[in-house]
Length: 412
Image (spheres, rainbow, N blue to C red):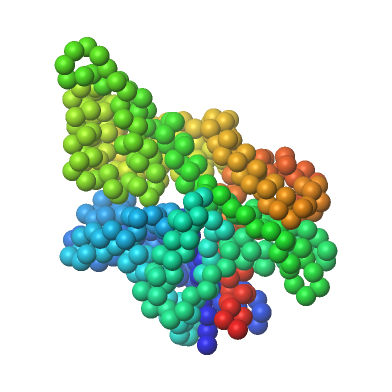
């Protein structure tokens, strides 16, 4: 019975199988290797869109609700809260399940096979808290079952990437997978042997590319909307700083959709009424009224990528106000993101320490995951493993390649 390998990611997802022992990626969208992990509930046409279609609907200004980074909600109580969407009471497990159901249908349509079982990737740790970490797998398992799979098994994502990148190592070499994804950073130390790979240790932390976006947004964009501004008291001349929570949530991919409730909009209006800098808080009011939070998040992400590639980027905020933008220099991006990159390097060192291996004994450093392409992460990891040869695996498909290879024997 065929088993589908599924990489359900924070930002992108993919599916694959093995063909003659080699990974075969299934194109879930035409000519695309990955599928954006995003959904859009179209209020006018009463339908749920996923992937690229969801993003297009958002950017086109269609009336509806856009959601991204749903993986980051796994394990949180929010996952099981019911919401009215398209005339139905749905929780977030239902939403993830419908996304996975479309992945299942797409894979079956492309291959002509039926997939009743899935091998799913998962982070080494969804959360630092052990209770939430365990609950996250429970939530994800339930989503697969609601999606129509009869069984699901799980594999650590960096271990799948190690399997896919075995050919980079000679026999006896010691490799470290550095998987910097959207919501987590995961590490696997493995040795290449005659009959396959030997996993020495795996470790992970809850920090990734969406945290990079959040930091950049908080420090460069949110001040334009009133973060850090002073608010006058209704009586007297005293002031206080605008509450941080609304800006923190607006800068966090998975929390943006919750800010469009009446209480958040009311809070923004109250802040604008008494603001020392009313123009800035007026922008916040319009962002919530026009539901522009995800547009801002996309602009920050694009500016980050441009700064990483060319040394300078721009966060284009024309959607908020004509002519509004923020310049992002690579030095600024590096300075803001370096503390998180150093935490990732520390987690990598902790991984090799678990196997009683010295950092200088690691012969190969293999970067996978979309945020592994960030210069600041490569620099931080390179500094603590200076002896290792550096490889850049298939950033977006290494995990699903490994899952496809492993899927054949996942239920033996």
